[in-house]
Length: 78
Image (cartoon, rainbow, N blue to C red):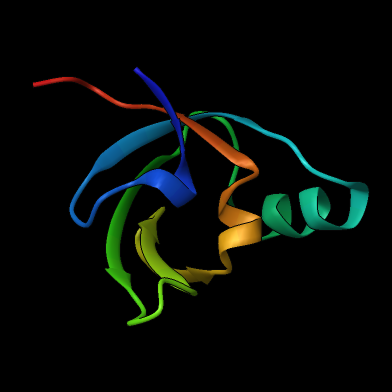
């Protein structure tokens, strides 16, 4: 199943398939290690839903919902 990162539930895992968005946002995500093939786990969500915290490549990364909406992941169904 394919989902964007902003629609993940806490604890959900996925592998990045693609990163979309405008030039600056896309470049910023790539610079932070958000690249195809990386595994992502959603760890926390702020009380109002923005920002979110994910584990990616062994470190914690905080993203805004608008940035997370640019990340498309493949999620394994149980």
